[in-house]
Image (cartoon, rainbow, N blue to C red; front, side, top):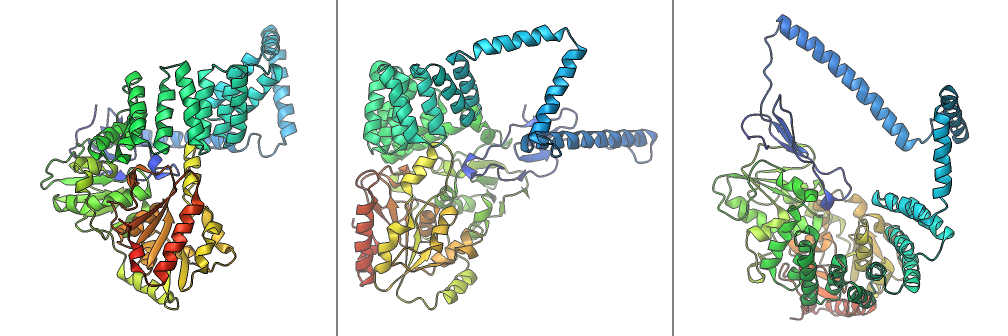
Length: 598
């Protein structure tokens, strides 16, 4: 039962301990029956203060003494438990012992245990006999591999599958399981080989066709993936994951209508699956069907993984109704680029609210603090009074009923700090000609996102021809691990790199304000430049994100953005050739190159 919001300390918000903001997870509320203290994920306040006995009374003294003893006992227990857990996790053997000594000690303790309790010896012998017999069967190792895989321990799972296949190498399902483990270990070519072996052993194994389709999709071989998945569905027409994955592949092929049909087929078999509704939402948004797409996207709150967002506060979610004089909390629920894109709604919402609080990523605080009418910005352990309403930023287009025709596309809606802009103006004073910022890679994530990130990213070497264009000065905007490429310029390129002086997005924005153009792959830098109203050229992969729509080289979200799309999966050469030609004409004085052709 949710606590009533009456009296108590104000809630606070802190960002997730997990490394990627879109994956932030808060735990459901825990209520203390005696005190009424509520904790909803990382937002908490106390609704029912515990009465304190009068100071000096015997009852007060006794309670204080007992509480102190209990607290000391609890703290000692937690310290011991924490030390044990740390030792167990980080140090498999005590620090003062070698691995050999520890193993010897373990065997000695076991021998002593059985010597003191002879009755346990028959059971021990029987367990060893059973293990000896069971471990000779491939099913034993396959089941062990599946248990490891369920816990995300894919190296151990792979070792089990290899042991099973060493006993008997003609079991197709074990080859499929091995392929899954290899894919999860980012070894897709080996995974493909294992799955093709499974299909050689059993050509009509639908699971093998489905998993092969997934691996081929990860490799960017979308047409081969489609063929494999259609083979699976011919064998097993009600394979839910097969239909879903086929929709995923068709989405990557830019066939949004067919992708929608596949997702709807999967939803017919599993109508309450939140992930399927999310995939359908992306296919609808890619096709420009925003109204239904936003509605389907709201399914991300329906299941337990995201229920924390509904339990986040004991106040209503804002769904577009008049706010009046009430206070509203707007929460950044996904990545930096999403926050930069959808913070455009904040001024109009803040103007209609009595008080507006933003809960955002720390690196965006300084930049977004310049948004008008925002009362407060909170992040790491920041405190605020309980609001009357709240809404996730990715839900703002749904709450505002956004369609293609009503996208709030006026720019700039973000501005850099004037003093920071002046600072960078002085530092760039010696750079005459056309100033161009470059960003060539995204961030690395987990699972299939690794493959998507690789498809959207390029190497700095690929941009080297841009450095040969006269009167063009190049500046790095790349952060994260790929930024190390800027330490070794490609031959023929002169690249100035000030990113070591960046502390947050406000610094990046101030530098961009002094540039003439930003050229970037699909990263948060594109959204930042677009939000600042700066001309930006998007180097876009073939399997584009839904927000860039289909068959267009402009964007209704950012009027100053021009897209250079891959004509085929992985074809960066033609993209960069067109960019080089356009930049050459721009440097020669053709300002029309800054905008899309139509």
